[in-house]
Image (cartoon, rainbow, N blue to C red):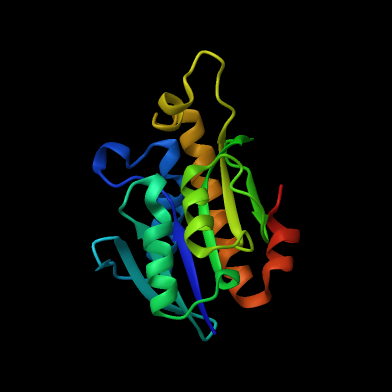
Amino acid sequence: MQYLLVGLGNPGSQYARTRHNAGFMVLDEVAEKWGADWKAWQNLGDYAKVSVGGQDVFLLKPTTYMNESGRAVSSLARFYKIAPQNCVICFDDISLDTGKLRIRKNGSAGGQKGMKSVIEQLGTQDIPRLRLGVGPKPDRFDLANFVLSNFSKTDESVLKEALTRAVDALEVYLKEGLEKAMNRFNG
């Protein structure tokens, strides 16, 4: 069986450490731990292929900007014949405190435009996802300005631990299944 792990974010060094790039950060940690080498995918993203527990696992970071992420996801998933249920989309969530993880089997986009694009392109909400908390948004901030802001020093240390847990959660998912990952890492 083949799997696809996707990190949502925006391309460009100016966005590298912003809250909206939490999905990219998860995939960068995964790639580092599993020794992945990134390559270009059809001018739509960067991808890599690794083996985890005997499973072929593709990693993808769309470079289409957040709102068009689904184009890259559907292109790679269709090319390698990976079912939406074997994809995990990793992205930021302002409704969760910084560092909190939430894994779900399916559901709506919840206002996250990158996930909305993925759902539209794959034609289903039955797509597992790992949400990484980057909030809550302070009242004084505009939403776009907040998600495109860098983490504070305090939040950076919380984020570092959360990224490690996110990689562990994805490994449990691949080796033991979604239910075990949800039971162990949702918090």
